[in-house]
Image 1 (cartoon, rainbow, N blue to C red):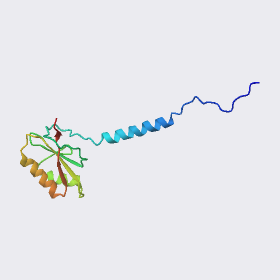
Image 2 (spheres, rainbow, N blue to C red; image 1 turned 90 degrees about the vertical axis):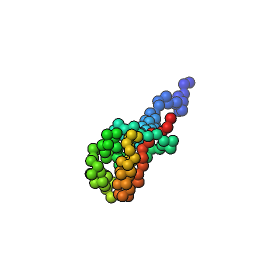
Image 3 (cartoon, rainbow, N blue to C red; image 1 turned 180 degrees about the horizontal axis):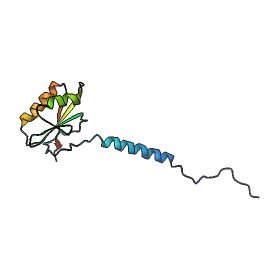
Image 4 (cartoon, rainbow, N blue to C red; image 1 turned 30 degrees about the horizontal axis):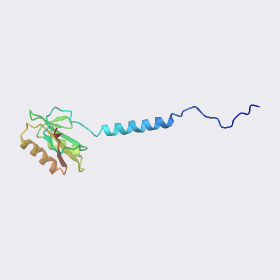
Length: 130
């Protein structure tokens, strides 16, 4: 007599849990990849032993030919303070200085002084030493 068994083994595989895990990993990698924001302008940064990545709010770049860029927008020296104050918009922020290593220090100090007067924290971008 052939009696059917009540406990049947299911050979189907549920992909919904794997899809959820892959989706969460995708979101994680997309979010962490945006934390590394390289400067899009061609400057040769100085190297430093203690180089770290900072979430930048406002980026000021000084190129070797002494052109100033605020968040990759060309700005004259006279309009630098107004451009920085509009980017910071009254709140305390972080200004990251991307200064080419061939630029004299006086230009870096000028921009840092303007940012400090606007109550912003100033960070100098460097590349890690090899």
